Amino acid sequence: MKNIKSSKQRNLWFERFMAIAATVNLGFIVFDLSYVPWRDFYLRKLPQITKVYDPIKGIEAHRDTENYLKTVDALEEEVRQTGLQSPQVNGRLIQISRLSSEMIDSNPFAGVNKSGTLEKIKKRMRSHIGNESAKQSFATFWSQPYLSQNGWVKEINFFNKSIRPLIASNYFRQIGENGEFVDNFWIIDLPFVILFGVELLGRTFLIKRRHPGLSWFEAVLWRWYDLLLLLPFWRWLRIVPVLVRLDQAQLLNLHPVRKQINQGIVANFAEELTEIVVVRVINQVQGSIQRGELTRWLSQQENLRPYIDINNVNEVEAIAGILVKTIVYQVLPEIQPAIVAILRHNIETVFHQVPVYRNLQNLPGVGQAQTQLSEQLATQITTNLYKTLISAVEDPVGAKLTSQLVESFSKVLGSQIKEKHVLSEIQSLLFDFLEEIKINYVQRLSQEDIDQIIEQTRQLRTQVSVPAIVKR
Image (tube, rainbow, N blue to C red):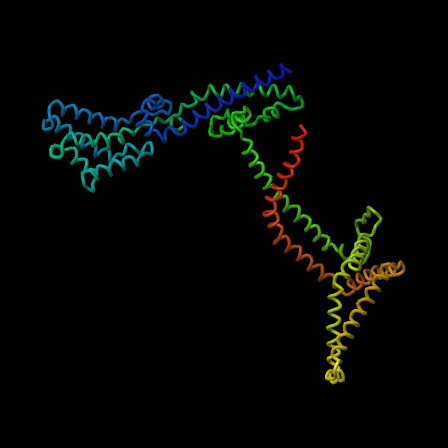
């Protein structure tokens, strides 16, 4: 027992180690995918990261924008040494103004899809100078009269704070022989891929040994999600095996998520299966109608497929007998007062239609006598009919005659319907009625009832599991 427990503990620690390794690898992948879009942020906040990771992505400083910033640095040094009004500073300002115009024309930001950065630079300079032309704004900014009038320190601080970071964010990215940007992330990813590949081979060997009937391909597919850890492309798909491993290593509880996913899948399948089953049944009924099986059933002819009786009981006659007894012994006694009231009303109506009786209505006591007579007649008629029905039901001879009547009625009805060609119209109406059921109710059934069925199933499982837990 201790050996088994120790073995499970070692397996759990191994699973956790591999899950953590896969998580770290996924973290590197997420960082790599986000590095280029977020490089400006890293450059401002964590410039050390850009120095290390730029070579991995084939990123290097752009010569034109780097030269521009170096020229501005040289200008600042000359101003400190010779002053703003010196000829050397004037020549440097002219050079920077020319470089500004070339930067606007050549757009060195376009190579890495950062043209928006250049537009932001132009907008800020136009707003600062108050000129609609970006070139003229730069020419004005990099001039001795403007810098002297507005203050060198103030203006160069504006440039270093608002313009320089945008220009410095530009870069050049190398292109490989395949025409794509250079990306050496595989150097970081390769050790993880080797680790996961060796692990997959080991797991495949163990699965094959435990299940000799499996082929090597089937053994590999046993852990198909681990194959995503070996793909050199679509690396973001590794989130699938990472989540599975974290759940298996008990570092993350994904049971509620799996439960919801399973319920969603079951709901979708159940909805489709409900539609398929119900529509299939209706189609079979429609097919039976079109094949004329209804005609053969009504006329008691022999079917193409023999009818199978499983209990030697005529279910139709049995059901009819139950219904008759229920009506006679339970329904009629309950509604007898209503029947008496209807009969009394009809008898009184007949009395009022007789001319002689209308003349007698004027005599004293005749109206009250008529009411009593009507009630007695109605009660007597109802009682006699009820007794007749009871005697017919309880009398064996009467029951046999009634059964013969039902059988004769069925035969005559079937033959008459067939002879008078009414059945074709009935078949057409039944076929259309079933088609309307498919259109109006089947889809509603699958959509409205599936969630309720799943909830009822969950409640049943809960009720079943509670006694089992208590028993333990």
